[in-house]
Image (cartoon, rainbow, N blue to C red):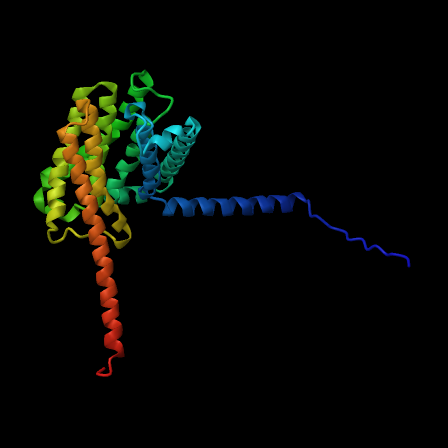
Length: 313
């Protein structure tokens, strides 16, 4: 039996007009995609780099030889240094990418950036990128605190933090208690954390006066903010439901203060322990309150089901 083979002819339109049309469509789609990304992107996405930076600093602290070989950091000390370098590189890449995106947003969506800066929640996230850079600087495997590059980078990151301090704390001071009651929310603690992270970085360089300056600036306003949030005054509960996880910042602020004061004092003294115990108490309170709210919701749901199925109704 003779086999037959069918031939398929593929015609490709390689004319310059078609290629130009495809190129134009690709450019339009790319511009729309970039425009959509810049519109939806905001400073709150720096929470990603903030968490990665915190993990790198924690890892570097645990593998510090001064802690000895006791658990729980014995396992981390047995891992090769490349693992830590990869984690730090991932945090650096994430922060650089987010920073480039936000710089582009500043150029092409300046109105949105301005609205975010004037928002009582959005303005606090402007501290997040600088906190992330400070964390990466302190955990950097290639930059020592006694080098010129460390000093230059410290100034680059510290100036925006102090500038934002003047804006936020100046409003609290000039507009009074009523204004602070309206704008205070858990994300306001990012301003405090920014000062404390900068204080710890300055203490590692040996700049005790600058470290104490930033530490006192952060802790004084933390006390004012903590009392305001603790009282739950009318009008202060203006945090969107999607941002409820930022209540964890209640734990972050005293924890960072404990690390900062340890670097300033040179040892883990009584003040550092007091701040650590405060963070542990707040953490336990948040866990217990979260569990209590879950039980209340379950009980309410069960009662509604019973009332709906009751023969009286």
